[in-house]
Image (cartoon, rainbow, N blue to C red; front, side, top):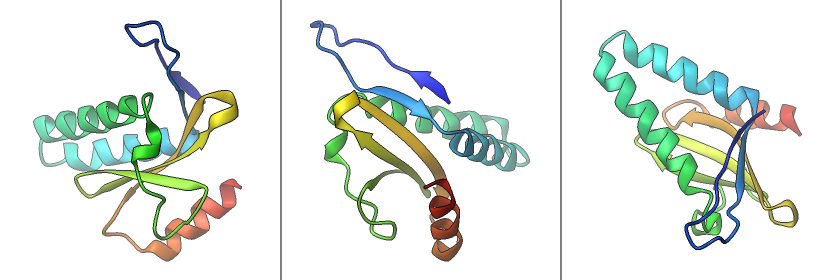
Length: 117
């Protein structure tokens, strides 16, 4: 897992963001797919995803529970991509589980996420 975290300017602890290998691999696949058409597009989408994930450090509860996966998984959207994550309040951590193209089959997503549990 890859860590991503910092402290708020006022010294308050933020949630630490961890990436599951599956999520990092999905991000790499998304980047490579878009890169076939546009370097700028691939860079832009990757940066938007990283920015959205970084925003999870503060008040991650603002994002809804994923409608297909249900609790304990939540999601935030970047373009057509669902960033699926889980909040661990007791450890002040966020685990990014997967990044999924919303146009793909939800059945496959369910199988993949269930294999992580």
